[in-house]
Amino acid sequence: MYQSERADAIIKILKKYHYVTVDFLVEQICYSPATIRRDLTFLEKQGVVKRSYGGVEIKDDNYTPFRFRQHSMKKEKNSIAHFAASLVKDGDTVFIDGSTSAQFLGHFLEQKKDLTVVTNNMILGIQLKEYGINTYVTGGYISEMPGILAGEITNKTYGMFHADIMFFSTIGFDKNNVYENSETYYQHHQKMFENSSVRVYLCGSNKIGKQGRLVNCAIDELDYVVSDNEIDEEIKNLHPNTKFVCVGN
Image (cartoon, rainbow, N blue to C red; front, side):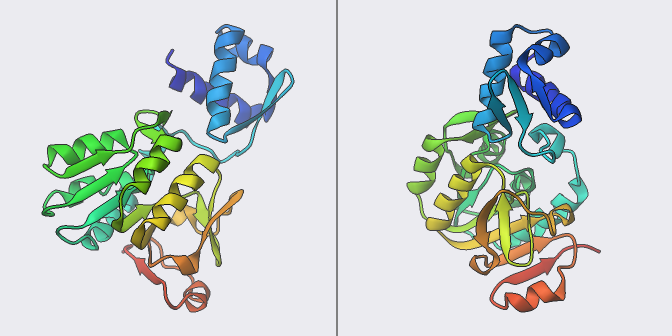
């Protein structure tokens, strides 16, 4: 079993029991204590679990591994990405984060000319390079399989560029703020904000009204919110300088 598979198994157990001991995980997953501790360190760095002496608890019951998120709401994410790509102009430099929503942008950028894309998603980077797009993958440690990169190297790479437009997604937003649960991804988004002119938030309907541990940004800091669901008029009225786009039928 690969580490990513063990991590998924640990998360599934923690969602059921909320708090367990290392010995319990060893018994359930049938790997050595040293291996399980390494897996817990990996998950702790992502901000998914909180460790205490002899045990561990899940920090976010709503956390779902990346490869599962890839297959959820595919039609909606595709529609969101289709519109989002229309905001990209020939010759632009583009930041794309490691969210599954942003990954759908890939094939909609194929016809753009003279683009430069910077992303922490290795799979997306390979796809864009095959289209002949000038692509930089940030580097960093692999935080989520199959190829999402994170950490200080990722931040430094985003800091080396200025983007005409950035695309990102998070756990959710309410009427005032966009939220994130991962401190690492929060730091990546802050670096992208510092170095981009236009900020586009990609928001599936499952994210509306959903809060997290960290305030990623205020909605007023966004140029666009693109969703498959109509955003409440109250939110629109509170943020007249942000464009809310519904791509749903």
